[in-house]
Image (cartoon, rainbow, N blue to C red; front, top):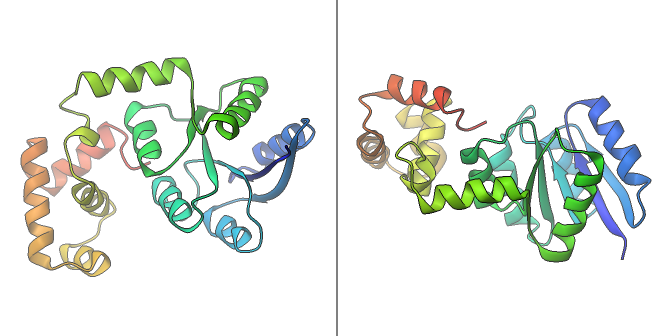
Length: 211
C-alpha cells in the first residue's frame, strides 16, 4: 500500500526537507504541500490524502480549530501533528480535536517515518513518553489542567476571550445569547478560581494555552 501524504508547514525550508525525505521513502507518495491552513483546505478540495502531517502553529486558523475543521469535513483523513510544542495540554487538545497522533519536531527522521506508518496501520501514534504523560494526567487530574475542568463550550469561550473578542462578538460567532456567554464566562472563572478577563488572559499565557 502506498501512503498518500500531504504536508503543511509554514516554514519553506522545513517543508522542503520533509517533502524530500518522505517523498523518497518507500511506500510514501507526497501528493500535496501547503504553507498554511487556508492553502491546505484549498488543496483538500481537489485531492484527498491518507494522512496529513500538520504543523500546529501557522498563520491564520489555529491548529486546534484546523484539526476540528478537517476532521468534520474529511473524516477519512488521518492527522499526525508535527510540532515544536509538547505540553500535555496542547497534545491533549489536539488529540481531542481529532488528531490521530502527535510528534515533536526534535524527533529523528526515522522516528517520524515510523509514526506515519503506525498511524496508517493502527490509527494512533504517541511516543511512549508522551503516552505516559497523558495517562498520568488523566489518572491524576491537575487543577491547572483545563481539559479536565472545563466543558467544550467553556473552552471555546475561553479561547475567544483570550483572542480579544467581546461578549457580543462571541455570542454572534457561536450563535448564542450575550446572557449565555456571560453565564459560561462566570462558570469558567469560578472553576479556574480567577477573578476577571485579565486573569484569564494571564492564565492562558502562563500555561501556553490555545497555541
